Image (tube, rainbow, N blue to C red; front, side):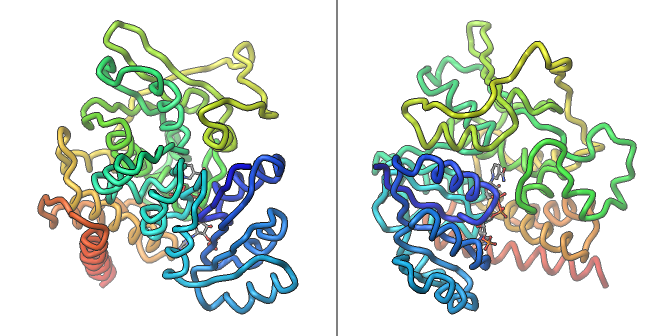
Amino acid sequence: MKKVSIFGATGSIGSNACSIILNNSTKYRVEVLSANKNYKKLAILAKKLNSKYAIISDKRYYKLLKKELSGSKVKTFSGEDDLINLASVKTDFTIAAIVGIAGLKSAYKSIDKTKVLALANKEALVCSGNIFMKKAKKHNTQILPLDSEHNALFQIIEKNNLNLIKNIILTASGGPFWNKKINLKNVSVSDALKHPNWKMGKKISIDSATMINKVLEKIEASILFNLELSRIKIIIHPKSIVHGIVNYVDGNSVMLASQPDMKIPINYALSWPKRSQFNIENISFKKVKDLSFFDTNLKTFPSLRLFKYLNSSKLEYSRLIALNASNEVAVESFIRKKIKFLDIVKVIEKTLISFKNSNPKSISDVFEIHEEACNVSYNYINNLRS
Ligand code: NDP
């Protein structure tokens, strides 16, 4: 039986992973399940999946979690320290699906305790890619991306020589505002949350509407596949059927297609290095009437201009940490209706330019820069509002 832990079990990715495991309960033994606040869902999942441990990060919900799980064999924990301790439990397969930098410490800690780290939490990698990948290499841990685009690219590239790649293409659905005659100035939170193809958590849904998600994904791909940013392209593909394309030096392009359903990459990762039977339809190409691809444009996606502040041939992490931190602050502020949709990119831009290029040497350096960048962003937002 594969020993599995899921950090961020109650979220969109985590819940999909839990349902696959539940349908294949003879194959997996669940060690750790984590949540932030949603103690009820965590308790339900822990009981259904018979997990050894359940951890709630927000200590205010610990008593409630304990009560829900009284009479069961699940051992309960709370707080960030316990979360990191439980990331040290040995597993065969760990899913990092906490959203944002909040997931970095547990994901980083788990690297030498697991054989495969299935990474949904792109923010963790964007902020610490150099340190993260070095540790994975040292301990021979496979980092397997869950993001559908990166998972597709991983599947294509896996058995090929990276030197023979000309460039790679990440597809983007375009989110809720692409090709719509809409004034972005006044879009509401609920407009921005309405993703046309994917059901996802709130933060990534807003990131998709601004296209910051693709900015983060391009950086993620650069780290995972060791390619300069200039060799990673983004194209709009509204149907979300083709997820990734690799252009090889010999004129061949290989692309991967599947339904837009996160269970597919999660199941692939869980079964890796083999493939396994999965009850989901392949694409019926006769029925697909329109497999179009389009250029991105800065008018709908001003976030793409942020690349001009990033070195396209060498990643400089202080700027990447600042980019991620300011986005986290700005998205939260937008959701709380403190800023407008188009302010999100302005907050990021203002924060980014105040950071000099440097590379952190440790995870605590990463958090130091993160805190600094959050302060710059909050100050800017306060000035915007006064
Ligand atoms: P959700 O918001 O749906 O879930 C986030 C999970 O993280 C929940 O379990 C949540 O707990 C937990 N969490 C939130 N904040 C904290 C915190 N401060 N400390 C500890 N745990 C916390 O997010 P998604 O599942 O949509 O996304 C997760 C990650 O996967 C993101 O990095 C996203 O970019 C990436 N991703 C998601 C995709 C998707 O289809 N959803 C696709 C590709 C990548 P609680 O429920 O208690 O709040």
